[in-house]
Image 1: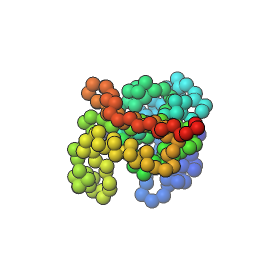
Image 2: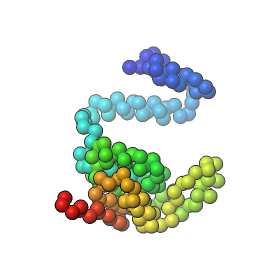
Image 3: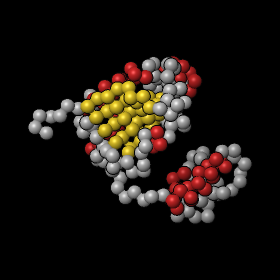
Image 4: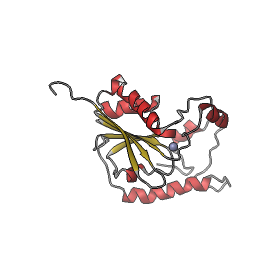
Length: 199
Ligand SMILES: [Zn+2]
């Protein structure tokens, strides 16, 4: 429920501190970014009416997809997935970072995923870049997980997944590269956990 200012009381209390500026929802204050945000809410009204309800939080295809945040990748369409079928974990580059491992710990142990797809893509901003360049560009002193070669980066990330002790429930992993121009997926590397004796 939103009140006339557009915020729930709790939300306003949380945000009404420091330098954050609150404004009434729908007010035209001349911020260039505001119409962009307003479009999101308007689009949501139509979506909410048409959406299929998914009661179960567990991905029905026991699948988690790790991929890049790139705006040209429609993950569900690319892989023929539907709402409720897969977890999608996105970051710059689609690299296996600490935070991806955190999500996968829950995806596998709590929500039943046993298959992971790591999908990088052509024309990625992290491909061919160096940490130093990206630190200069952003002013952020971070590990950016740049990509030298897709095959090597995928092997590296899959190696991390395979050797992360708490990801034992993962039975199969694939490394894909999505071509943002053709829309095709290249099946680059696969891994499967050997069946345990007696299982
Ligand atoms: Zn990318």
